[in-house]
Length: 249
Image (cartoon, rainbow, N blue to C red; front, side, top):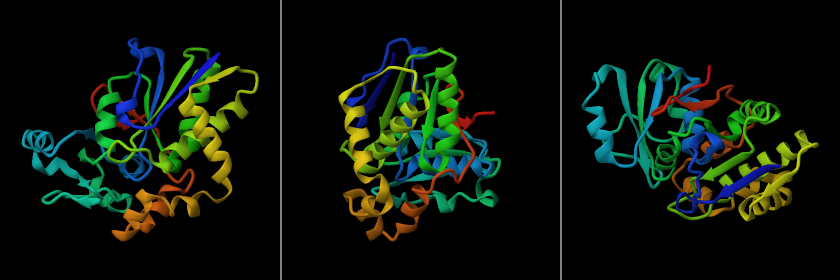
């Protein structure tokens, strides 16, 4: 029996005490999870998620300034004094290759930091969908683990369609792939699957009608939404080294 649990916000998370007993996937489609994939795919050495500007600056001051970048946003806009915001288009190889990035965002970075100590932790996005999906399928086919947790960042501790639709897509594909397995879904997982089945044939256009996307469009980030809903653009699997995000080798 495979247990699939979806939690819509950081505040809802119900995590196992035994950290190695679950595959844990963090999801922030718009935009931190997508940006993490882009940054690591562009050669960033590592990404350190933080929860506040104070924490970010304290860390930044401990590093050689030639090797590190302050990255992040508040309410969609780049934080004053930071090198980069939260648009994946900012994270090109000539800017981030070989660098350590401190990531401080409204929603995603706090979620990543909360989960980063879990040994089977991943960042999921549409841009790396199939690459992470195959990794998770391999884990379950080897019968190592029977619990998968899909943890959504949401927006200011509220439900967001884009994260939940990713969960529904992941669940639908996993159930098709592992036909011989029995699944138990919590209510969040069941709702995610149902929502994806309704909107999957017009996913991008539907998402652009939702609250979070409307705010990003107002801030002139519509192209970020288009990018974030393009499957398999970036062949990376972001994982934890215990404290930071790196590419799985």
